[in-house]
Length: 190
Image (cartoon, rainbow, N blue to C red; front, side, top):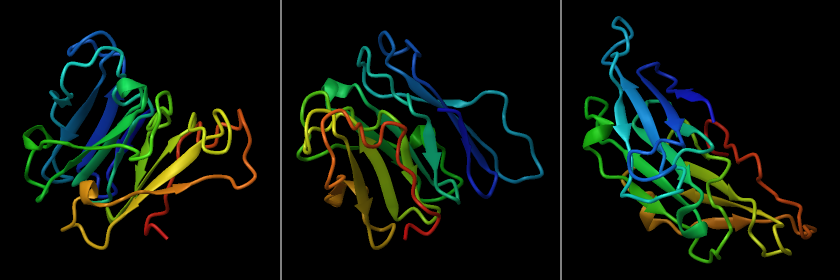
């Protein structure tokens, strides 16, 4: 999944999906935060994990950051085989991600083996739009795939309070695997 740097350069995040701290291949996201561009990133990152879940592979598709570095999203595609996204959202940039409880997002119509978040997630620069794929979703046939989009009007609304819109290829067919490499949103989410 690679590393992600906020547009302001203050936050760097990288996933370690095979990390075993919370069980075999439970995964983690490492976050380096600094207060200004005049100082180096700290040598010791914050490690973000979830409850013990073996084979969950948190961060398999990498992590995504908003432009100001206050929002961090990572997929956990093997959570109960449905998949999920974890969203850490800080109220202020001086708050550590380690002090934030993540919100878990799922496909409300998801099915076993959809693998939401497998290719990672993407958050718009302004933090209002979040997208991720479920390449094994079977709405258009087995493993036809889909992309889920959460869109909110302001950062005062939690992504947990937003019902995602599911996008599919209307001419999709079995084994198309839409979204296999992940989804990407523009900086302004339009």
